[in-house]
Length: 123
Image (cartoon, one colour):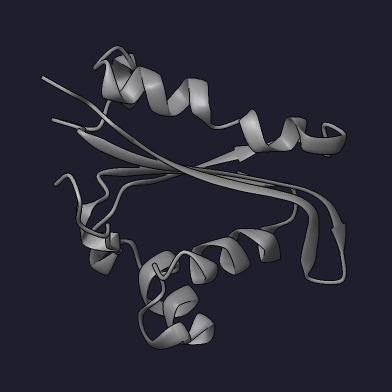
């Protein structure tokens, strides 16, 4: 996949930092993971209706404001464990690509610190 732009369907697991539930939706939307940017339909169909849940297994990492840019690093260890296939009973089968986000110091919809990284397992 070298040299080509990643798209949501390339991602096997997402570790989205969750300091407030609305920020999870904002980050997923910013990443292009919400079809047509329709947050209401996404929340009803893909989150609220488990039998028809979105095709990507998403993990939400909960836990306050870590302060400054540290929020950008929260999801990386969990994503790495998934890509190393060492996540135990939370393991996503055959995980090869992960997106992880950090979002902190929220100021009216926009984070004072924000980060996203795509990680890939190399065989």
